[in-house]
Length: 116
Image (tube, rainbow, N blue to C red; front, side, top):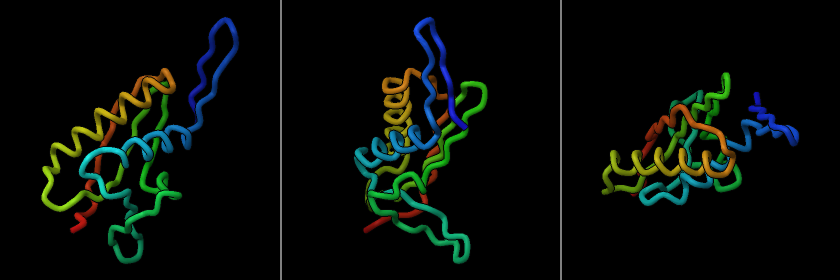
């Protein structure tokens, strides 16, 4: 689903995959994040994703102009996971808000693995 905003000049429609791409690119730039992850259905293992498939580790829900982003990441060994998660939440929320003009209701960070 996409979010549509309208004003006196016309309307803008932002698709969920655009929001997911913004979130993925921004999250990868955060210190301590090694990569995005997806949960393997068969084996239940976290799989490190390449740069071209960043959006597979992200789920975007848009309901009534409320955006909720779920991000699955893999962090670097030795970093504070809480600090990395807080940084990802703040950075993703700010970037989506500044690039699209839309408000973010929640950013949920799921740490799926640690990379040595």
